[in-house]
Image (tube, rainbow, N blue to C red; front, side, top):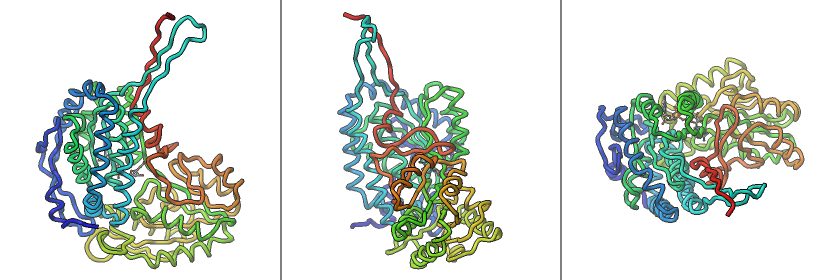
Length: 487
Ligand code: NAD
């Protein structure tokens, strides 16, 4: 591995807006991007005004026909080149994510592979978009069914997977022939800006991608959402913001894809392979320092094995090293911002006040940066916030259950339905759980399951639509039926 010097890396990342193929300054005062492991400023980036949001949409609209008419293979070649370039720059992208977001370097490298894969996957899917042709049932006409790009898209991404959340939207949008305005999270804009530089380098025509960084998120978003020329919004982030965007989208009857919050149940039956279940929960809980929409949030363990399970998990957690994500062996990097540490600390206090036992951890980090220890809580009561809400931190609350019926009831007792995990060695029980648990995705005896070929997305308050897989590109296409007379 050849990790660059951090200052050199930061110096080469663009910090301006990218509109119509030009890098331009924001008209508001630039804002700071912090290193969450120190709380210190890494750099400042452009802060767009609402008018600049409209300018970005103008640029996307200006080239929408030419990009839609560009042959699918040509669009695909550009995506493929971007994939290759991101992989070449893997160590730079990884380090950049570690220093702007906090995740440990090996996880950041994993995200580069995972995130780049959406560019390759959709480079391959784009040329496969085809229609149908056939006779009407009555035989009196012919039917043509064709697929078309939806039109200019607004793509809004969160801070927790700065590369993958961007490529998972940009890949299918561009492959399908759409132009886009991308708005990365203001906590982690650098990765997206670097990705866009890659697209510029590999020859993406001007205006196809436009990037807006801003602190006036609502102001910029509102003018874009209210613009008659916008055709689709794809959002990954928290449920309240998603609900608000859906209300705005309703006004214009916009196509929407919503990847929202989660509160994944992780159910361990007494017939589970306990080693597998412990490995599974460690991966599903502590990856990304617990800051994943798919993170195991509520750990339901059958009573007869709960204490043994909690002991084994705590042994593993006790060996975790906490520190800056660039240090060797670190598992627990910083949380993304101080507010996140305060929220997790409050949730742990709330659980303790309701009777939870702290098996290990439970404290804020000392010193600089935004740290919270990896924490295991046992005997957590059902009304604790760590059970009812999305934690987004390295806290693993164990709730005990008696039997299968109770496990299903508990698993489904959340407004969310993104991910679920079930550990059992009973094949029939596993299949019953697929039917019974309301979630868009399930890990059955496995703790990490995302990949570009898999349809990612939730049900209930976790969202609508799918990203990745065959379904992912359909979200960016509309279907047109044309009738012609029988010859
Ligand atoms: P967030 O909702 O605060 O922000 C997400 C994005 O929306 C950011 O770019 C933010 O600037 C923008 N935003 C904020 N207010 C807005 C507004 N009024 N109008 C338009 N855009 C606005 O979420 P976050 O804290 O960045 O991310 C964490 C959340 O994202 C968690 O709830 C997590 O579960 C969810 N998430 C979901 C998935 C998924 O695929 N389902 C993946 C990752 C994260």
